[in-house]
Image (cartoon, rainbow, N blue to C red; front, side):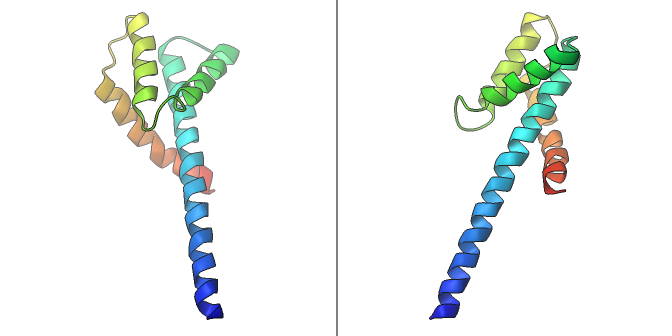
Length: 105
């Protein structure tokens, strides 16, 4: 019975670790998106860093990525930039692989 309990604890530990990795990678991806968007918006230095943080914080509004896409899209529209929501989602997907590698390192 002990080995069954050990296996259960190992699975629970792995699940918790995997969930933590996903959370960190998602937050990192959002920061990378914010840095990219800041550059597109013409922001630099502290303003760019503050904008990137605001993109990370936007992800806590609702489940999923739509809150982040909506924020960046609205900011682009306010500046007259022609990035579509689909282009932002594509950028999010490409940045997730980068973020996952950075978090896993």
